[in-house]
Length: 168
Image 1: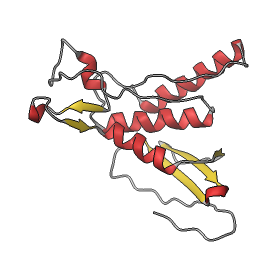
Image 2 (image 1 turned 90 degrees about the vertical axis):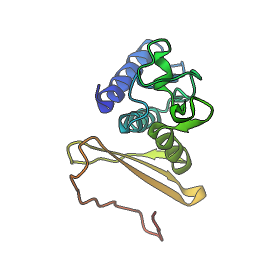
Image 3 (image 1 turned 180 degrees about the vertical axis):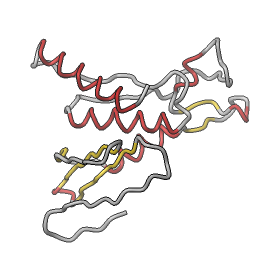
Image 4 (image 1 turned 30 degrees about the horizontal axis):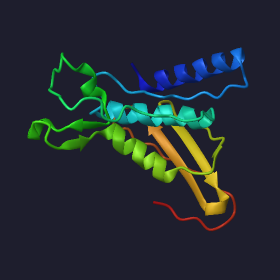
């Protein structure tokens, strides 16, 4: 299913849980996809779930890391082995491990986002934005998550408060 839809379903579930008891913290303790973690779809899912987790101020958001040491292309005995962010490398018969696109998406988000979530919007269909600001560390981050196929380009402008900014 579309990572954007899954993330927004998470938001809906969070709102429903808060309606039951607003005093309780909510956490995503495990997420991933059964067959597509090693693809760009896994990276998009990681980015969208983290985005909703931050916007909704969840206690934590965790992803499947390493589930099984045995893997194969069609691992019917251990199907969850293919959903991990770190997987046994089939090229080495599982003697070493490889990181998936979902792992790299989570790593980039963890290293780049800090402070608090800043409201942000985009009018571009298929483009979702997330922004954070950390004045104490002198950092701000804007993450753009594109759910449309590669090859479609967009012009993006980001409004920043007065000051000196540099980007990467």
